[in-house]
Image 1 (spheres, chains in turn brown, yellow):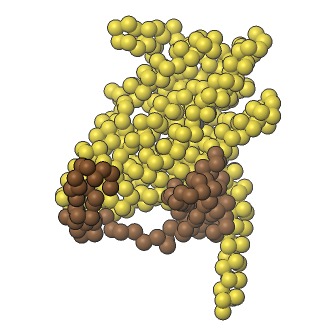
Image 2: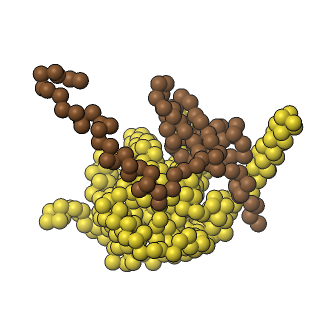
Image 3: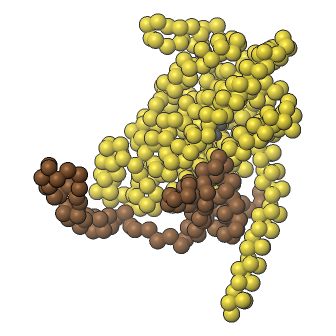
Length: 98
Length: 335
Ligand SMILES: [Fe+2]
Ligand SMILES: [Fe+2]
């Protein structure tokens, strides 16, 4: 008696820009038949209280993510390059803010 | 959201294939992260039992939001003013949104929307029993906002710190929206209490019918909740059922006083030594009877939900046919 649900509606990731001048931020996902419908639904699901001025929707399958198991090799090399941070350098106090 | 029975056993999650066979160093890394109060994300390795518990809890939670639209939805066409109607539509729409955030969060664990809806529609999956009671008059709508959403907020706030990232983030969104739900209900009751004797009696009657059911929303007593300890260990549950229930009672008693209603419990009284209100016995036999499907509205709610889903099939079909056509047209033009 049940008809098929959303089997064939692909998943989309939703990104919302909360105000002009800020970046789009990931805020969730939803199912929709196509991009136009995904935008429409994203408006209803994620911006009912003016949470955004702009929405991006991206097919979830289009996202390539780094593998959490590679976290070591991928991110650790940066850990010993502390000279990339401003706090690595000592500047005489009288110079003031730099 | 309405999470009373979130560790009520049901079938959801059982069908998930074992994703990995837990090498011990991965298990240790998982445990270490939990111990450090860190967050688990979808791609991280997690024990099957953790995944299954979350699928069950998040999907029950989502179903509760969706079924929760029904008792109040019944009153949209009968709201006493345009203002109350607009408010009620906004609230019901929020609950639909909450359901969608939560279904998405559950999907990150490898279940599908389809599987979850199948579970709900076939009656295999559980949802909060509070929605298996009828909304007899307009005061019920106010009481649902005040007490049912109030209990839900108590439950949900600690879930914003849940160890599973997507669930916690969904809860943050939900919590931001819930506060209006409780306040609009309480305010609607305040208005009725300033009305006629008959209106005041309606409010009291609604409180009498809903009070004990709301206390049961927090789930069985800690002593009878075998899953609770594991849920606490995993950082899925942060506060025990009984502690949340006590918090809710302590917060609600003064609100009832301001409203001018009594709470239907002769044993309800301040305990100086404990610094909390004592309260009477909850009827757990009735609670379990309703969970098992024999409450006054279980059949009606499920039938309404299934009918709405089936009646919407042509819309889903049309959207899909349109999307397919557009894609074909684009391909042809590119060729
Ligand atoms: Fe909700
Ligand atoms: Fe709500």
